[in-house]
Length: 251
Ligand code: PEP
Image (cartoon, rainbow, N blue to C red; front, top):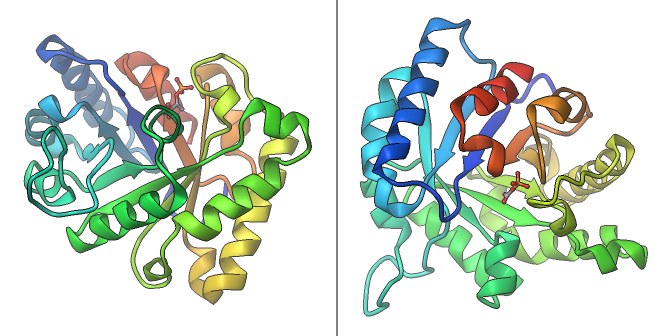
């Protein structure tokens, strides 16, 4: 962990969560209010149907919210899509862009991801830009080359001056219970950091780099101890208040 950066623990609920799930948010809010103040920003990225409700109910506990995707345009004839402006209007502060499930399931390219990040900036949101290699790419020794290329193209030039978060999520670790070794995580995070400093100078030092992929209460502490890991993007373990709180406490 890099101590001068405020870490971020963000929960990605994916396509999970109904009105009944609001009780987990309530429970987490109570845990955060009762316990010692978290040493990180805590965000929940619920499905869009719950965003406004969670933004409202969680505000007093310091939990902030984010969307899981946005369209590059701010409004228009795009049936079924949601814009960054709409997410901001519903109370979001963050938006995940370029998650591997969208890259794979919706054919999203690095160029498209970059335009989504730019739409986030325009709406006053902080994009969480996801990158990560597949299992085959890692097996072929291509992990750093793939991630380096994704960072180079998906992260817009504006990141020099506007807050942006990058989440390294090896595709093979998402939802599988598998995680890279802490040495492997360190290697990729160091490489991303060096690339950001080379491109953006000093501001490359302050961009938050999250790790994501099967982060759980049992492994969070070890992962969060790694230099240049400034928090986590948490899928499955963010759905239950107890697990998510344990990860937040690991910071
Ligand atoms: C994710 O989808 O962003 C993720 C990290 O999922 P999980 O924690 O379930 O692997």
